[in-house]
Amino acid sequence: MRAGSAAPAPVEITHWRSGLIEIDDDWAAHDGDNMAWAAPGLDDRNWQTVDLEEMGSAQPGWHWYASI
Image 1 (cartoon, rainbow, N blue to C red):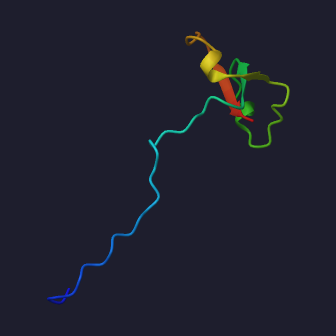
Image 2 (image 1 turned 60 degrees about the vertical axis):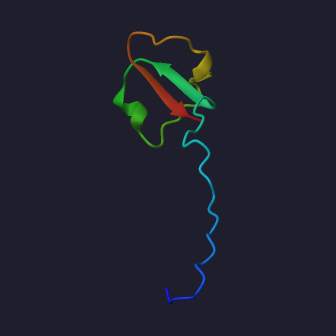
């Protein structure tokens, strides 16, 4: 910067609210374990829909979750 010139005005940027996102909506769940459930084309429309905030404490065993 040359002597006597003004500093550039600060540029306003979009603020990241908290860095957190909600992940409790639109999930399907299936108890058990089957690697076929990881297939990209899996039809999980028959899986039970769940609200992660209302599921209560963790349960023992394997559980698969899919975003719907």
